[in-house]
Image 1 (cartoon, one colour):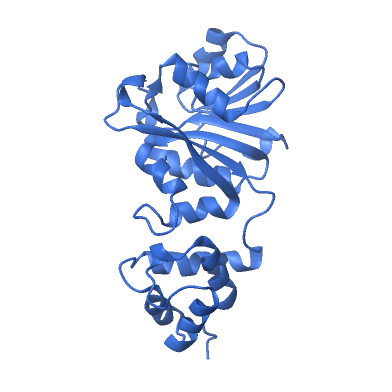
Image 2 (cartoon, helix red, strand yellow):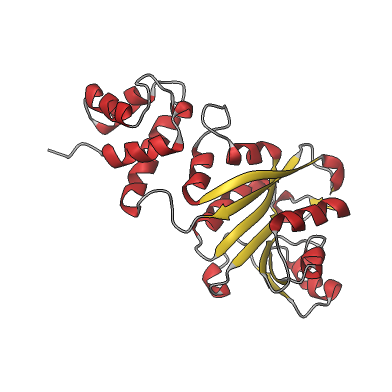
Length: 260
């Protein structure tokens, strides 16, 4: 097992399914994160992609070019969270990765903020994958789902049992396919407030969001409830019952009270 507790997918059929789900084809620029021993890299190359792989483990990064012997493979020995994505050029890039469970969400957030990708086919612990694609009203719906929805569309593509990995994890895994939007679903000038409101409400997710936000913003409860009504949300709604589009509307209409 490599650094960060990564589990390597060894089932050949599943590896080919991931490549199909990614849509990678001849001439595409594929960015692989954590290639390990190249189990996924090999079918990506076989699909005709030009693969750039970022591997944090020194030994694995050094061994990979010799294992695969392909002119279409470039390996960077680096921690992806510190890697300069600007060095890759404009792309467009198709991201494919079996992510280490420990840093999967951190890697996802870095990808979402990058502008030069079109699709990302990423494997997570199943529980995290369900949070990524979750919709309004469920226990999995929260800040992670909002962060993805802000910049991409996401769908659950595959579920993989522990038996397909070495070493064998104690949890199921799942693959999520994300498609980057041409622009975020909220204007840049409102994004900071979007996160201020959502983070404040979800820290007290069992309470009525309007009450929590009224206190946090220093705004009269009636004013906040009027904004909720305009966004199509009941005054007594809890955070998980507020759709993404309503969070956007609230971010546009509610801002912190001006300081006296």
